Length: 411
Image (cartoon, rainbow, N blue to C red; front, top):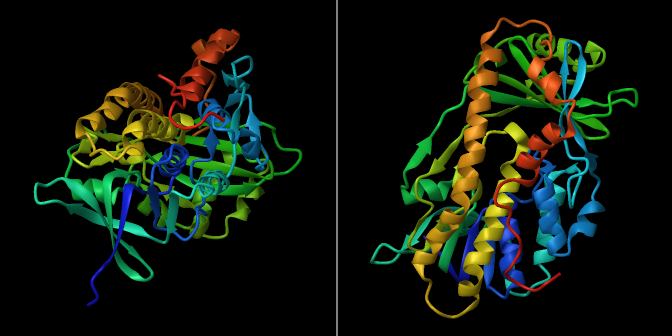
């Protein structure tokens, strides 16, 4: 068997998702020799997180990519609604917030292509598609000094002064590092599917809570991206039944004729997201750092995963970029500063997600399937005041401890 090929870089980023691509771009802008490994041939994966919150729009503005992003086909949502038995109610309202008063819905593959194209403008940046990180390389003293990878040409060894793992909630490198994970559990999983949209349909992203059921409908202009919440681990039992069973569960929650569910031809049109909330107790070991979903898997509640990952990437570039841009040895003590900076926002958002799962979603799913829920009195009262509608918009849209780009050239 031929010996693996070898490559040497200053920084190797495993994973070409939002955290990995944003971090690769920010480091490249600052002069760091960086390679990003992405195991797929392209970014075309359906039902990825497509919500681009105001905090991420602001980062794009800071690095001069906002105008290019806004040329991508997208939808702007200024309000997030709940549809109850009595009608639709605004639950979150971005209007009046600054500097962005909306949340954008755009295909994640277009967003990642935008970052990749911008990064390729720097000669010190390399993106290796169809190249999957499969393990860690360690020095005799145990320090991580690179990754083992695989591409269509065979095995590859990438020596790096620093490895940053952005390879998602199923992180191969997290398993290889053997770090302890704090798991919080979840009462739910999610079934994703698309339905065609017609001009007469409601013009708003909305959640639809019902007895025993919950549907979220993201308005994507020419189609609906739908998320149907099911009990944890119940996917296999549901898929063992005829697809019509699923159609019949969803149809009463739709704001249009049930026949639209006929757009689902078989179970292959329905994708499963296994929901989990967890985080590493420690995000780094010598030579290796974890950020994004690899460090903290988020629930889809609030659609914050991509935006927390972007904030992680900006903080990482700010804290480690100046060190990586130099020629000195990596100071492993500095790696812990990323966790110190980003742990509090992660804890707060995960705590809120856990409360919503335990107090709202679990009780919904425990009930026998029935009609739409009546509007809770507290929501009816709070919705009358813009300040209350701003709270979820600020919390999930702008986040906690917002990061600003400090490393690299000004846009």
